[in-house]
Length: 225
Image 1 (cartoon, rainbow, N blue to C red):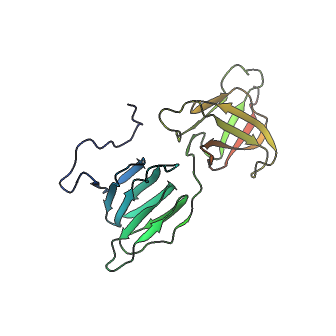
Image 2: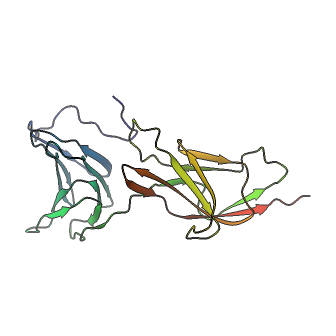
Image 3: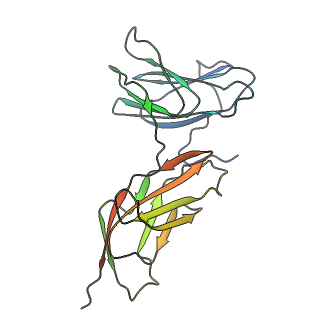
């Protein structure tokens, strides 16, 4: 069994657990949850200061799983549902439960809950930083000029779905100068056009498009002394 880095796997059970119910307390940090279809309905609850998030297993024969990303920082709860649906029971007294459907997200605190809005799956890029300036020496194209890096969004057993690094000359990336495919989480380049460039990373997983933000990169010719 493979377990992704920074992943919580529940093996035992807490005092509030039953065979059909599991519950954990999230005080700070993030949890990625995936529940597969089950012939016996099972519920997984995440208790936070902003409310209780309730996930249930999909019924037998369902095409997909229930997949949810939950994070809590500074008292702000962020919930993103990429597949299935979940229920948030807010911390406010007498507040009505809020259903979050597939490809939706919301933000909640102990005092308020936003309405669910459309979710755009994201790839978080690590390097290079936005607005980075590079000094390029055309006579040394065998040396790595820049390394693009990003976080993993594929499943632990999926290393074949490729990522695409797109580099263009405009912020909307309508003019693509490079579309490089790679199965890894980084791409090293020895050469880039001189000037202001824009780039992002994208992939498609089970029909869902994941994209990073667009970052700007300045490539300048290294002066010769």
